[in-house]
Image 1 (cartoon, helix red, strand yellow):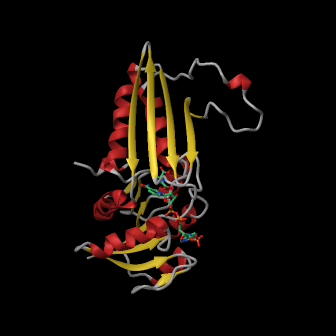
Image 2 (cartoon, rainbow, N blue to C red):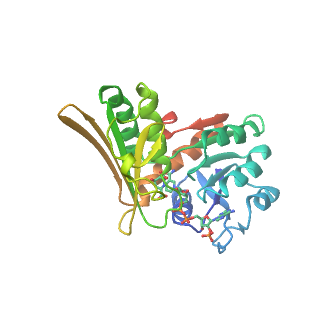
Length: 255
Ligand SMILES: NC(=O)C1=CN([C@@H]2O[C@H](COP(=O)(O)OP(=O)(O)OC[C@H]3O[C@@H](n4cnc5c(N)ncnc54)[C@H](OP(=O)(O)O)[C@@H]3O)[C@@H](O)[C@H]2O)C=CC1
Ligand SMILES: O=C(O)C1=N[C@H](C(=O)O)C[C@H](O)C1
């Protein structure tokens, strides 16, 4: 049995992870970490440092928030705990620095999106990018999301930028923007405009719009329910024990 600690166990994603791990035959929840979590058949600690000191788990799953995830990983990785991280908002250089602190043989796995559909959308975007001079990303999320743009949108923009010659859209508009309004033409991520919509009614959706002479190509993915992430999270938990160092993206484990 793989013993799993869930950081953020009282949150939207963390509680779904607790249910998914509990339902799986080959793993169990050893403990949770959440400042306001209630005990539910396993101990719940207020911090990852306390959980690591208590021990008894192989893998830490983190779905917390952008300002706490780095501290959680800094407590777990040097102690040799493999980490499966869904919390978004960590820059690549921060992930690399955290992975460098890990005990030998320990894996830091970060996936900005654990759904197969979003992974494929990003791969399709990478494939399309060299053929279209224009590309923009629009992401739609529930209004409790703390980070913007989403981790998926940032990764998509990075993949588009890597797949084509560096460029910024020639489309006009930025010079007319209202100062301080955040940019009606979107935030530029590696030269790709990214637009973030927040509203009740959404879980998580994203469109990638490519344009060239007289045509557009739109890729769209929708998560209608948080169950969409669980097979990917379980795959990550099952995979990290045999890996070492920093691994980014669920595609690294998909056959
Ligand atoms: N990679 C992926 O596929 C996905 C990633 N995400 C990401 O996961 C993260 C969590 O999202 P979501 O579940 O919606 O957020 P929630 O706010 O619902 O859950 C976060 C939980 O973490 C708790 N928390 C705060 N500080 C700590 C700490 N130091 N240690 C442990 N737990 C802590 C919060 O407690 P309290 O509220 O009391 O502060 C809360 O219960 C976000 O970054 C989001 O972007 C979400 C969906 C999919
Ligand atoms: O906060 C969320 O809900 C989500 N966060 C991830 C992101 O930032 O990309 C993944 C998914 O979009 C849901």
